[in-house]
Length: 399
Image 1 (cartoon, rainbow, N blue to C red):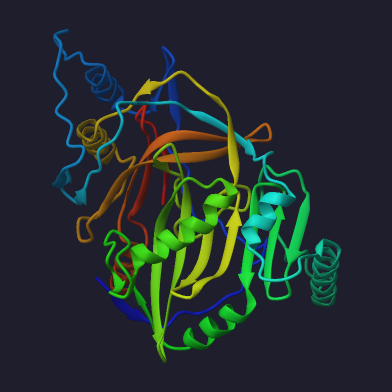
Image 2 (cartoon, rainbow, N blue to C red):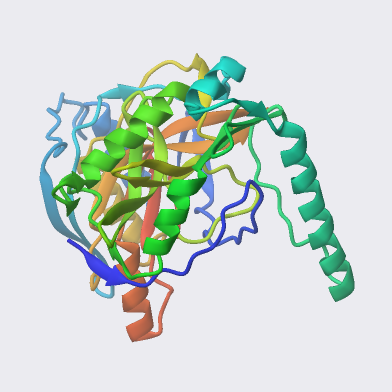
């Protein structure tokens, strides 16, 4: 499915201004090392968790009836607090570990040179880049001072070591930031893409691999991008948004994505971001002629530890928990817009200088459909994005 739209372009920097937009998850209770939503539904939640362990209310063994890999169409809740799920549920592993990740110590000058893939003589321009960044910071600071306001630059948190290495062949540029982030630009190709980007974009359905143009599809663009990213150790990516442009014979895609770790995508951030949080994500322009631009934030990581594997809640149990949270008021939803995506992801939390990846169920509406609904009704109160701990069933975050 495609939707035509005119995009507003904003430059992407390694520092950015971020706004908070997430609701606090419900208060929790801790009994017998099981975290769950605190409220009148404690017994119901505990019963569902026990069922997940394979034991029904009578103590008998119960066979799991998971809908993993199937389509789900369901309306949950009662009266004026209901949610509608219309989603394909992917097959998921029975068990997963919580992982600890840190900056990728394997990344060095050779890896960056391979990422650059130079077509001419290579020059180290690290000092020049840092000087330009400092000059820009100073310029913004002077503007802030004249306006009598505090600093308008908010640093994006991460786990890097603060290092920077930048190489160029005169046209292509490649940068490593802190061994967790980086960027790439083919200047001449990006200029071509910028000319095409003046026209309206077509928003693509990222679930459809053949979206875009038959001669160079969305899947082709992703494969070309992965060839580039694999040089830096990225094993796979999850596309969260994709836009298609075609002007005067030039075809290119704007892609937004998150890393995939052991086959599980890292949770994408939708809408506003909280400045203190870490959101591993990437952005790229890819054409049939090659990759024009890549920006990576906290995407380049290596695993340092894995906790003992724990059993993952089936989506049957997730639905029962959602029903419980709707009944006790922990979730306030409407059924006018369906929750069209349900998937297992890794949630990210910054702890002791490392990124902790914990398995979560993500259930959300299409953001465009939610925004349209909010505009028509004048209400932005209903929940449209839910993160649930995939082991404990706790509501971690709702938007």
